[in-house]
Length: 309
Image 1: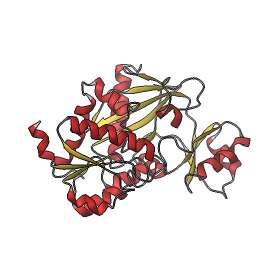
Image 2 (image 1 turned 120 degrees about the vertical axis):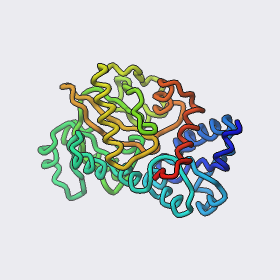
Image 3 (image 1 turned 90 degrees about the horizontal axis):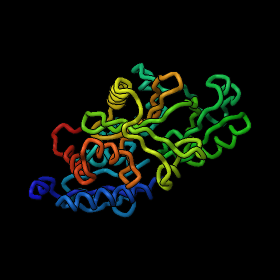
Image 4 (image 1 turned 180 degrees about the vertical axis):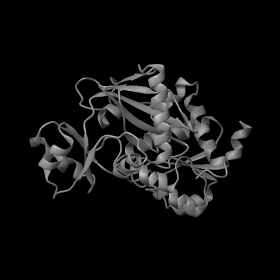
């Protein structure tokens, strides 16, 4: 237990004011309890209820804020200003990773495979978008996580409703080509891609949506993932490159697909993934022998290195 004292007083940043507040409270409390069990002097800190200037009373921060304000570089910038070491990705990588379009632009510029997309505005020619990327596609708010505001569009008549749903959450909306195939998630921890997890939502949901992520117990998680050894290595290497390309570091998660022809496609990056009982990072870490408590300490140790960001 004594080596837990090296961390000093730790603020576990949770809650916040994004659309993912409830998930962040669950994740943050799980992390807080794990650190306390490990002997770390940790306290929960909700930026919605306290001024971030109070963080000067802490030695370091474990960021478990999902979505805007926590995953987009804002809190990272405040912590840099205060000179407080923190877990995970820095300001720039967080800002890019939170923006699905910027992420895609970086990946395309790095010649990494990501599904074709178009930005949709109220002035967009919907028919031209359909002609350009083809049906079906998925409509996504550009700056939200947890599949919030997403819809699958299979016919032209569904397009307007999907846009209306997405614009409730974000002024910027994108249409992304629907990839039919198998969905995978790849956890990155300290420069290593962990064993790939295959996601199999129940047949009655179109994709791995918010409900499947947090509330349902019938999603199947495959470890081993069903890929051949060489395919899994290929996907892990691809995701490490994708993670580094956006400037992400420390820990995170990349979602990817394999289409019917065996090609891999990168979907998005999560720089502060969920840490609840349903979450994928603890599942992947468990596959290499880490308990949840050990995983939380390993992530917190990222704040001890001089050049974290």
